[in-house]
Length: 128
Image 1 (cartoon, rainbow, N blue to C red):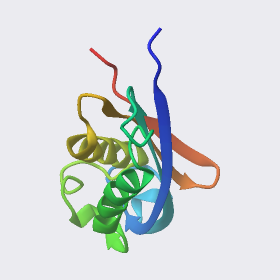
Image 2 (cartoon, rainbow, N blue to C red):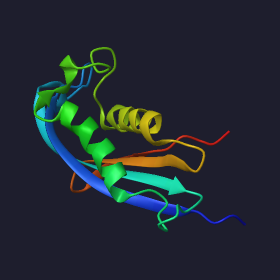
Image 3 (cartoon, one colour):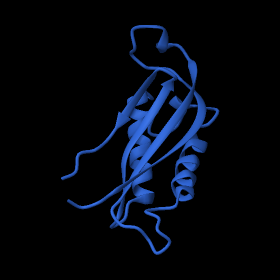
Image 4 (cartoon, rainbow, N blue to C red):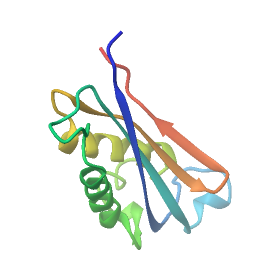
């Protein structure tokens, strides 16, 4: 069995959204203080003994969060076309982070997006 290292960081941002077509109060504009957990798997350590520096994961996650921070998500791509649900936001982070961080020995494993302290969604993509 091959060894792997699962590294996780936490970032946050605040934003507002409306859920188009939702049959309830969330169809009206409202906001959240979101928390984003980024999980990265490393299959090899570098010469310093790290899979990937936590700083690298934090910077990438925070840069994406900064694009959404204190914004109305429905005005931003891709949420002009798709609903800015927790599920779609988590998938957005996953894809953006994967494009930046994935390499031969490092890959984004999961993104967990906390909408409240008691409700979250975890997005992963199956390996082929």
